[in-house]
Image (cartoon, rainbow, N blue to C red; front, side, top):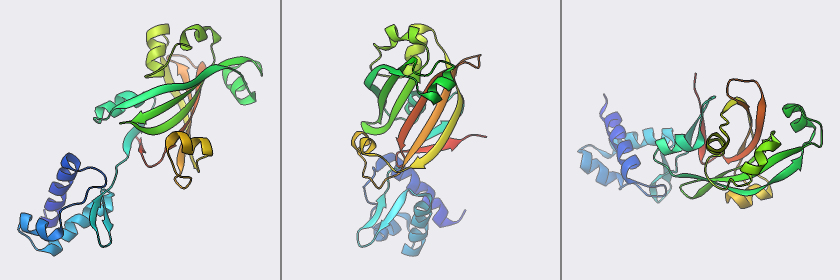
Length: 231
């Protein structure tokens, strides 16, 4: 292996273990002395980390560590909470509004109910290590769940449904697109109006059936989450 690639690998391990976003690497002259190489070799090693998005060169200031998005595998069994905990992060989710609403044409068709029929709607705010990551509107088809669901406040909605109602859900479909945030997104996600968000529209079925019982629309910060498509 070329020397600069070996240094790049070691530097990446150091950064991920001991640095936080916004920290600066030691000066290239100091790194060259540490690895007993010339500055050109160090610079090539850092170039590798710049290419992967781990480091950003700041003119006149040095080489800054960049915040890394959290991986979110997108497949039928993906679970937000479990996935982030496996990455060593602390995910949280809390309900910010809940109630019964009239189903519009799209929701009614999806749930196979009459238009204007009542369905359950929850809005949750998800955070990663205390940072707002996504705002999600959940629509639930079964009104019989409301007497239990209205008490849901924090944590995983799917885990709550499984524990309290013995309802197991599986992802059926997901649509993904990008858009600029609205005022509500900026306020709840602590975003500027210039940072795009990812919009996920997901349908979930009762496991083992084709019955759609949940539709969710998630507005997610594009700078915090990176989607991983598994093949």
